[in-house]
Length: 226
Image (cartoon, rainbow, N blue to C red; front, side):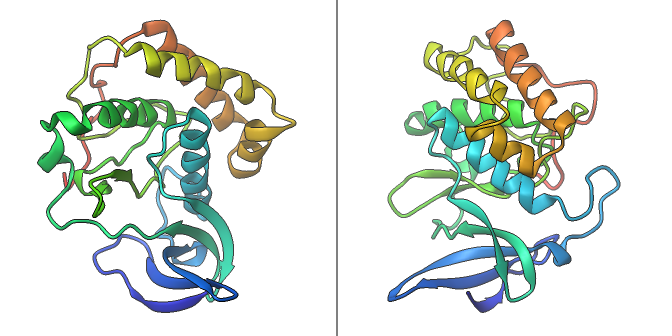
């Protein structure tokens, strides 16, 4: 892993790196644990693990929304490493929220943020690559046991859940219950037992409700919005 430079305007240390495997290489985003800014409500040093857990949940659902994200040892110690997305400038959530081409993916992303309890889904965390594909990045403030959903994606609040999304969520409950293998075992290594239990309950609640939630009594949007 070779550091190319610092990504500006990030709350935590965020580095653009080149990852090499023999003759193959790719750009990635490396967020070392030691560069995390302390937060009062999330355990210090846990943000990278939460990024990886979000990727694993999205993959288990079959929702290819989060770039490949892993934990690795890098030049500044352990941290999350996420495949770099070459995004189109100015193409954030606000630019695509009324575009019918992204409606299905945004409905999936809204559901993903509900079950992962994403406390920081800003518009700028929704990227569109050169092929017009939607990606969700910066998934660190997730999986808290207390309700903390803060997102700009409230377009579907109160609307019925699409049948395909409901089916995917129901299918997720089996691997979440198998804590000694597969997804359950992987999440146990990344999150606390209480956080995995809260995730499972949020999936059950969303499936039972069969519709997207309304904004909670807490502050329901992140700041800044982008």
